[in-house]
Image 1: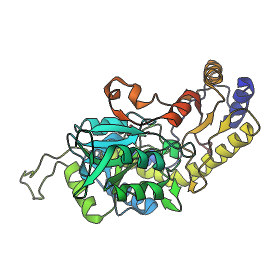
Image 2: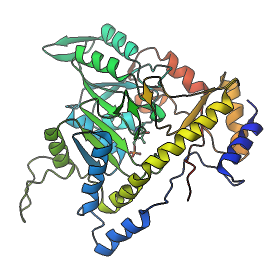
Image 3: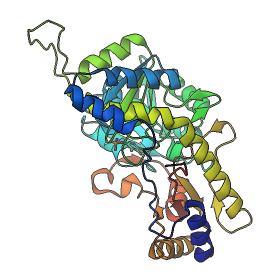
Image 4: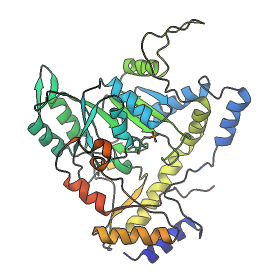
Amino acid sequence: MNSEELVAFIRDIYSTNEFIPLHAPTFNGNESRYVQETIDSTFVSSVGKFVDDFEKKIEALTGTKKAVATVNGTAALHTALYMAGVRAGDIVITQALTFVATCNALYHMGAEPAFVDVSPESLGLCPKALDSFLSEHAEVNNGECFLKSSQKRIRAVVPMHTFGHPVELDEIIDVCRRWSLSLVEDAAESLGSYYKGKHTGCFGDFGALSFNGNKIITTGGGGIVLCSTAESGSRAKYITTTAKVPHAYEFFHDEAGFNYRMPNINAALGCAQMESLESFLKAKRQLAEYYLEFFTGSECQFVSEPTYARSNYWLNAVICPDESSREQLLKETNEMGVMTRPIWKLMHRLPMYQNALRDSLEQSELIESRLVNLPSSPVVNR
Ligand SMILES: *Cc1c(COP(=O)(O)O)cnc(C)c1O
């Protein structure tokens, strides 16, 4: 890959000779107005109408039964796992090719991850690898799944829709049913991504979205728990808002809840960002098309959406032919002021997860050593 040509191509897209980041937020709508409204009204914190509005907007977009807004995506994942019944001592199966938050959320509940491989088409959890891992290591007793070796309970499966590309959900759901496992989707990166026409994050018992500054829309910091039933939604709301029993003035909390509620000032930003989501998605598809065209016929393979999905193309990526060409591409583009990044280190290489049970991670390792993320901010009028 000729880095100079790529850099010129990217500079042309963004029409700038300045530094080009991997992903920057775009504020070209009602952001200032709504945030100012919360300040003028003094309702910047845990009370205010924007939180409800934001949740309703996400419900309308995703079709989930109930969306519960939280302080960040990690808190949303923690809540989702807790709601799915994950407790200390449990095993949760996920991919090693993910952002560290996926594992941290379950680690802080005293649960342990187990890693299976990803599929090359989606870059997310591979249903075949999941099934074969379970066949080798697990057994179902009285409707619960256990590790054969230690009799620890395997409670849930957490696939992650890498860079907004949906995993093979039908097949994963089938495996989860056969092995009595809850499905919790880490949809932090996939707002606006659809699997066979249905929004990601809405297939499992729970899903988690993130609105961190680098995601497709941002609330500054924020997340949402997507709940598959109205009852689980009410309960998720309850435990993320200190489990306070409703009363005009008395403080009575009937369990140890979390203080995970998204502040109103952040939700105000989110409401404005939701008004722009469609234009961001359109701009991102356009950008992905440009990249695809650029890389067609080159030695680098552009990562396109899986055939069954419509991806949000949150972060564009290419797979280099080998590790040394990846190093060269990273070094040269960054030196020229165009930010590119490798994918995360696989989770089992991090000290806290190095002893986690894991299957063969052949595809994950291959992607880890060859993938490069490219600048992906939507090009829209500012
Ligand atoms: C961003 C992200 C999260 C967590 O989001 P925060 O809002 O930063 O806590 C979780 N999982 C994945 C895969 C992410 O990309």
